[in-house]
Structure formats: structure tokens, C-alpha cells
Length: 417
Image 1 (spheres, rainbow, N blue to C red):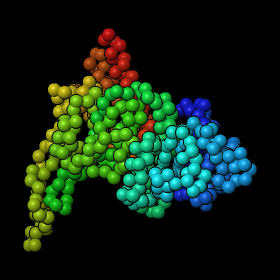
Image 2: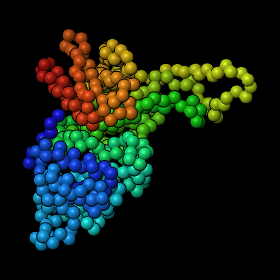
Image 3: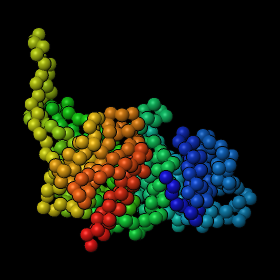
Image 4: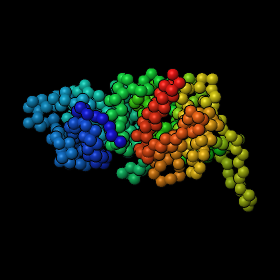
């Protein structure tokens, strides 16, 4: 997929961290999209990647010091600040985010960020505990309140051997987000629209210790919410229990159970678009034990029988609601019979589209950064039409899905006009 950044002059700040190696690929992707790139490295970044690499890829001399006599004789940092049409920091370490949030200017990169009027985008990268620390989250809130665009982070395995949110967003996803924000700045295809997204799993409690749940990570729904916000929408995200950061510009409502999510989704109506990407439990325990359920102390090995009852059908409830959004989109996640399940949901729940994805397959669906969707749409003759999207990064796939929905709605309105 190609992106258009022609005419952009991007000042790419590279801070210290193992993710600095990804910045080399990002330079290449930015130039492929038509942008000029000037790399500015922090001292710590030089411990991970050499300046010669960035110079070869960008075609410009790398800057790394306020005390460069040749450049600063003509106030070079001010010239750079004026030159840039956009500042992107990738990776953005916890230290750099803290210094930017508090207006420090103790090196070239932080000084440039204070001296420029160009929009700022940051792609955080750090250990997941550092990312989730209240100090980092407070710094991020400050930067977002000042208009900074936050790209990522992704969740996954980290160089330290741990798992969680904190991986730098992939170069393609960063370029896609920059291109989308440029193309839709102030007048996106969803400007003025209200979009409601549900994402993640639900947990159905058995007792104070155990619950019934599923493997949904929430990544697809969060990517859709982020993409809708970048396209100008006013986005509400109803999120099950996941460890993902809130996308920039998105209002988030956290829930736990299917009943909680049902109440939150219906309570957020009216909306213009509802996209139900959450993996909602179909059943919940009929009763929740007040105390932990213990194994029998006798020799009785008869096991344990749980009585389960159906959970409310959120997608069908939205589709039948008095304040039904004009566009209602559901998801179908299956290990087999994907097409039949999608067509059945489309007809039975009376929704406008179903995005079907296969789960339980390596590199797609739950717990993966990638996915592929078959989007089923009710055609004019009543038969279901299907459009294949991906495989691609979920961040890219989310934008493709939204563009498809916007296009189909526009075509439908044109046909009935």
C-alpha cells in the first residue's frame, strides 16, 4: 500500500532504546512516501544505531548536538525548527516524553521541539511497566492535551523478555497514520460523525478468583477507534479488560462483563456508526459464588457442574434499538465455517455489514498484530456481497475497513437519490 507525504519536510527524532533500529526502516518508508527526512539523534540513540546508517538512508547529514560549531554558527537549530513541516519522534523513550511534557530544552531534539511550530507526533517505545507507570501516562496526557499525535505503542513481546504494551509502532503504521492525519486534517471523511466501537473480551466471573474469558486482545477494535478519530470522528470506545493505551482523541469506557458492555453500548446511543469488534461471551454463570469455589475434601471425583445462561446480544440490540445508528457493523470470529457464520449473522441480526476473521490461526486474529477480514454486505438483491481486506497490520486494516464502509454508504445513498 502506498501513502502520500509528498512535500512534507519531516524532522525525525530518534531517542535511545532498542527500537531505534526500526527508525532506519521508518526513514526509508517516509522517503518512499515522498517526504524529505532530517534525522536528529539523542546521545543515547547513538549507543544503538550509528549516524552513518541514517545519513545513507535520508541523504542528509545527521544532527545530534546543540554544540555543532559549523551548524550553530548560523543558529542551525532555529533553521531546522523553521524547516520542518512535521516533527516525528520514533522511538520516543520515557525520558524524552518526560522532558517534552515539562518543556525542558537540554539537547538538540528537545530544543527543536520547543522552537518549532510544526505538529508533533510521538511513537512511544519502552518496557511495559514504564509505559503504564502513572508518571508516563500523566506526561502523555499533557502532550496529547497540547495536540501531540500519539502513534502506538503496540503490545507484544519485548526485548527484555516480558510481554505487554510498549513496542514501537511498525514503520508502515506510522507512515499510514501521518498520511491519514495530513489528508484529513480538519476535514476528514468522518468529521462531524459519532462513532461507537466496542473492543476486547468480556470476563464472566465465577467467584472472586476465577472467570470465564477468551483470548481477544482488543487490538483490532482499538485500531478501528484510533483510525476513526484520525478521520475526524468523535469516537467512544467501550473496552473490555485489556492492557492497551487509549487512542488519541478517543473517549474510553472500561467494562468487564457482557452485561456491563451491553449497558455501556446502549447507554452511549445515539451514534452515527456502531462497530462491534468485541469478543463478547455468549454465556455467563447463572450465579457468582460469594467465595472461592474449592475442590472437594473427600474422595469424590465427580467434578464440578456449572450452570450457564445466555448473555444479552449486544449487536442485535443495537440493530433493533429505537436509536439505531444508520450504520451497524458486527464482527464474526470463527475457527471453521467463517462464510456461513458471517452470512447468518448478517441476516439474523439485521445489521449492515459483518467483518469476518478466522481465529486460532498463527499470524491472524487474537493476540496478533496482523489480521485479514472478509467484509460481508447485504447487496441490492438481498444476497450477501463480500470484499476481502488484508492480510495486513491491524492499524492499516482498520483504515481500509473504515474507507470501505464510507465508500459503500456513499454508493448506497447515491443509488437511492
